[in-house]
Length: 90
View 1 (tube, rainbow, N blue to C red):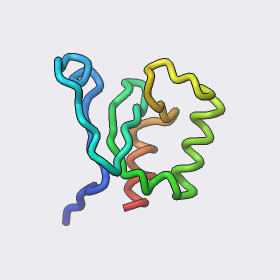
View 2 (cartoon, rainbow, N blue to C red):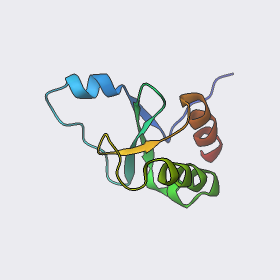
View 3 (cartoon, rainbow, N blue to C red):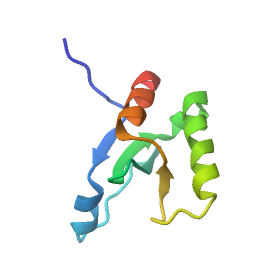
């Protein structure tokens, strides 16, 4: 039995940096960096209304304020935690 994470699109931040083209984020989605390796995820903006995701945003605000060193939104948790939270949101 398999499952799919239809709401999440993942790309390696290193691959993004190495690419000469900008990666387009589809309308209705938001790009975030997650984990120590700063993996890049594209998530639906509808996640912003969910309490579990708002908790992650609060943690990001506490840790970084509104000045994120990479220029994008950084979620301060492991990829495993992020995947488990977003899996429940699908």
